[in-house]
Amino acid sequence: MAAFAQLAAVGRGINTCVYVISIFTMCEITEQRICIMFCFKIGKTATETYQLLQQAYGEDAMGRTQVFDWFRRFKEGRTSVGSDPRSGRQSTTRNEEMIAEARTIVRNRRRLTVREIEDEFGISVGSCDAILTDDLHMKRVCAKFVPRLQRQTIARDLFEYSCEDVQFLKNIVTGDESWVYGYDPETKQQSSQWKGRTSPRPKKGRKVRSKTEVMLLAFFDSEGIVHHEYAPDGQKINKEFYVEFFRRLRESVLRKQPDKWRDGDWILHHDDAPAHTSHLVQQFLAKHGTAQLQQPPYSPDLAPCDFFLFPRLKKVLKEHRFEATEDIKRNSTKTLLDIPKEEFAKCFQQWQKRWAKGRELC
Image: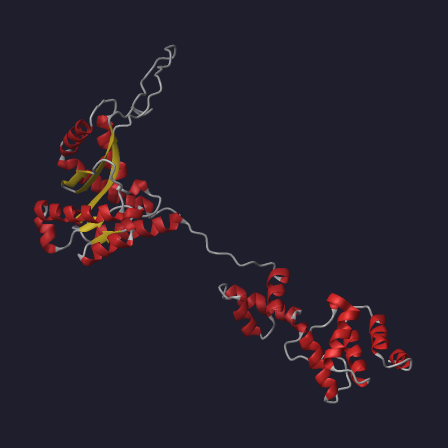
């Protein structure tokens, strides 16, 4: 302030004020506030003061609103250029006692957010974050989806239902869709054969599936095929098609299994393909009161179509060539209808055993 007084004696013209302000080229706010006080005392207006600060500090000058606010404060009699004390939490809350308390609460309630911890302790968000990350070395992570746990739960529930109700398995109608090809080469297991120690290993050329194919949709129960059909050429298995398919499936259940239809106890089982789980399909099934059996994710071994029906069907058709789609449909239908009734009953018994095995997985 002594420097200001000495400089003020030189003159009170605007050039002198610019010279005074330009001496303090540092960008600290306190210096600019002192300059504002100086300009106020020598009779400058707030606008003139703002212009002088712009000339002296350039881009580092205080904003117009701040300059006018401090000019008003000095006009009202303020003599200090320091900042007003701010209310709020102190930064001294990050201590050993607080860290220990935070560790106890977070371990007991691991889903607390930083905001909830802030309200719990009455400390700032920054202090909470520092305690959790720097002192406790914690980080917030999402729960990992483990399909095996869901598989275990579903398999256990289904096994218990089948043990409590002897009619449970008999009421299930299960099915899915699959491609059937005009030519499907045999698998490596099918081509295996016995050979002696000195006999050469059998060889075969690489073969590929034909481009002629049809989409088969088949549903069955413990007594046999309930309904099957082939999708039109070029038809995508989307939600609209699947709703219409269920209309025809319901008619087949009514015609072939009148007891199940009359009692209303039949249960539908299919996998979790997008077309099967779409809102349109689920709305249709709920509207008609059709109960559904849940399929564990990533578990084709718990789907009868995957471990029984389609492998059995395709095993018979492999290495046979069908030139037209009608030949594929005719032979596929014949193979389906030739499966003995006893095989379907064994399939459902095996399905129950697979549930029992699935519920024991850790």
